[in-house]
Image 1 (cartoon, rainbow, N blue to C red):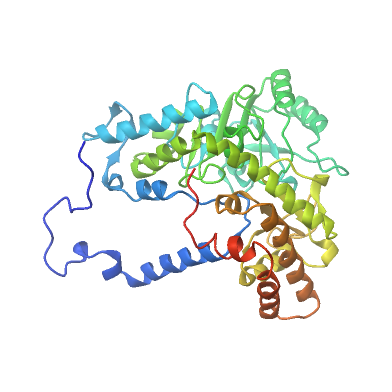
Image 2 (image 1 turned 120 degrees about the vertical axis):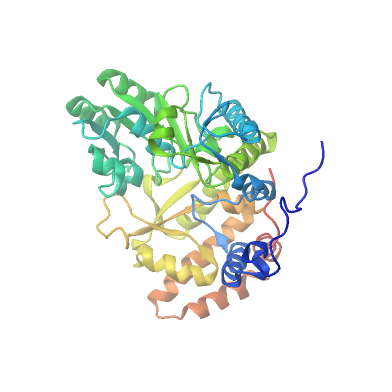
Length: 436
């Protein structure tokens, strides 16, 4: 097979034509923004739980010539000609994803897996109730927010957490399901650090005639690596994004959504994205991915313990996945202030509501941290223990009136002499992300 080249596929346009100029010689403002973002990613410590770094191979596929191909329909059933190579990549993505999760059917086309599944199972305007985890209890926007499709088209009832343990109140879930008889029961969220009881959700769905959807967007990579229980044996439908724990291009997949995805929700698919998904699924099948997934959970536990030892509280009293919710009220600082203050220090994270949070969604009483991106960059136990220091010192400095620039100076100065900071925190982010 001939090696693909970067030679143009057509005769060059007239000299000076916009269509014949590369990014470096044409749109310099966009190029500058891309270069700046590259430098930001290389030189910041990424603690946003839903973020990760893709491999060079995924980036290459994502920016490939397949971006020129329109492929409406499904493999071997396209509405356009010339889709033979798109069929190959989509079939590979489907085959690899089924192998990864032990499933027999999947759709790799959705931009949003959960919305595709909801559209496949519900009819807008029906008086059907969908039960989803409350946003202030770690739920997801796509499951019930009033501004989202799910909240605008359907009647939504939310379940929450036990006020003391902050664990999902499964007895409340069962009671609400018996009362409202929802068509859908949704398990999954964006900020729940504990293991979901898929078997109990299955029992409740069976008892009330509901369809059980598990949205494992934040968990898919951990499930694939046997670092978190799989929902596949319990759920009627499983959905996910691909760009979080799986280190894949931005997008989604679902286990039941063909007609809902096309033609219901999307028309022509992004074939370059599907090709990148196929590459990433293949990488995740590698045995080293399992080691990486387990390391993600272990390192997050290290970070959470270091923050707890310094006097901060974790919701639910701990974590069993890739993320931890940190209550900042003991420091007297809100989540939005901490997020903004830590970014100039070189740490990127996200503000997050605590259970029954009295603050507004754009303020919050806490932050959410995760270990996936750092693990992909080579961080280990020592690094995650040391990251806790600036995470605490910066909010304390703000509360004491100390300038953020001074907090950054003190952080770098105190970090450099430590054993592995200069080798890992200052160097790992400068090299290319590790490949799985």
